[in-house]
Length: 487
Ligand SMILES: Cc1ncc(COP(=O)(O)O)c(C=O)c1O
Image (cartoon, protein in one colour):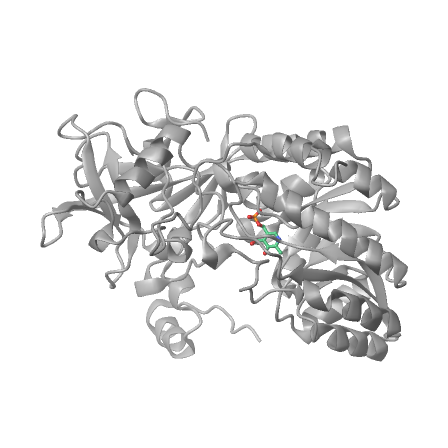
């Protein structure tokens, strides 16, 4: 979302302090217009270059019914990663034909539902093919499969924890096994070859990584077709990056981390750098937007001189599927948290303590060097000098840090101030849990007409403890709490 106005309290004309007071903090605030605009950029760019495409929103990025419904109404499909994500996608009205089923350890229940509904399964790993074939046989049905591939010779394209297509990946069928697997699928009675799939990873900011993978996919598709595995679809997964900081801000952060004279990172670790001193993590500035990404990917010449689009046409124009998550919702949400204390570490480094643990800002659990623009809402700070600080959550472990890189706040905050953390729409509540028995936060949607609507409610004490049956029995006796036990 665009950064707040000069008074540092409104985002998209909505007063963040008023919202925080009404709904409590931590609070996620989503923008319907931003989500719609991001989707529309993809759609228009694809429609301009290629006829047969499908955009499947990666439901895991922000699993909120209002978002999935909005995208469903715009014509989007869904990438789902469990039977539960499948359920919410179907509930939001996404037709099975527009759903792609992912996951490297799918349950029989999930696979069965996909087979019965005719949903294309991105098979992963190779051993899953036999499982799908057997389940389809038992159901007297056929299962459509894409082969999710990995083992591409890609150097560092994003943080290792979210690189999902290189040599060290728990996902996918190794490309060196491709021919044998094409033959295997063709030979299995209950499998119907559908296409090839790859998901490079997340927060990819180098388009050439996609281009190299697309070249390989094109030649694999040719081989597959020749072996009787008809490729109707090339699924490029998600991964398109977004900008969390502008180019200069990000360059300065990387330079500061590398500078041995200053303590910029928690425990002075060279976060993001490998031992050779090379950057080996996410880039938090992305030089392209979804529309430019699509335009370049389809039209720029690849190494053989032809564009991806021309190669696709030679292949008979298979459907191109993309599964964007972060680039649809990432910049469409802010998190509002409240400051409890401003203190220092024993060595004297500033720490702002806020009322949200890192489980509610989950990207930092996956990639510690993740950084977001953050502002004090309302400029109630005591001094107007920049205040370089780490930001810690409220959980009982030292690693509970929302910012492991010092961030220059616009002033020193004080207890009770609210901080607005920007661009938290993707994967912020990915690991949301009731850690330390804190409730999971509410989500408020700012609608296109500028109204606010509570779309996810904050948990109450019952929500936090309801799975504990003895607590339920006890609280039912004491407080009259009598929710039925779900089977
Ligand atoms: C298979 C698959 N597709 C799509 C996505 C979405 O990726 P992103 O949010 O980076 O676009 C993911 C997330 O990692 C994924 O695992």
